[in-house]
Image (cartoon, rainbow, N blue to C red):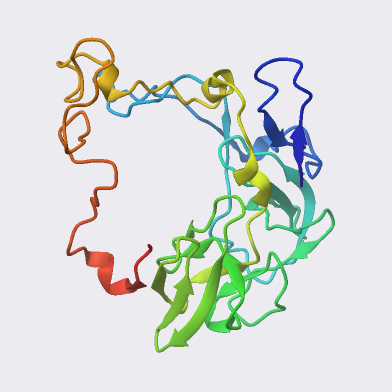
Length: 276
């Protein structure tokens, strides 16, 4: 996994830094694990835009990922490392002894031919293996962590991310997340060992606005360049500032650093240390 720079033969290539995709071993996805992915353009059932900055983007198919890792005690072999347009990490195609194939989020360092295992019991501490937090040693890097037993991994799934198992106390394990937050997770929830693949993703530079459109990201205009009817910061003659000493969103909600989390939220009891 590495990055690719270009000679500045065009203005956009001067700033473009993208993945070299050298770890990819297969060009086409597994057909049996694909589902259609329909785009909404940010519009609801009435045709009104409710999610802004969405655009068409390139057509995609959804890859069905096995977040639950519920094929227990069956040794799976990595037969391909693939690109997934729907996520920042790479995905690994696993084949089991009964010839069933599943996609998993590829851990960093996994290679073609490696074997992974999921079990309710203690197994080898090896990248890609999956087991309950109860059996994972303290200090281990983990990802794809369940928040509810049997629901499947919900957190630590982005490229290059990993959490650390800090302690075990009663029915809960203390997990330190990449944000700096430390939270309680039920000790019988499953997690996968290792860091998520493609850690160089954070160093990539899109290079031009067109590539953002390919990714389905619509251009965003600032509030100060709009009319007063469209945004509280809008209006004025020439290059005028926002005028409002308390910056707000288009609906009047304070923005630019304003904390929107509820003061008393049900999940606060699971958070030992808040993120900074």
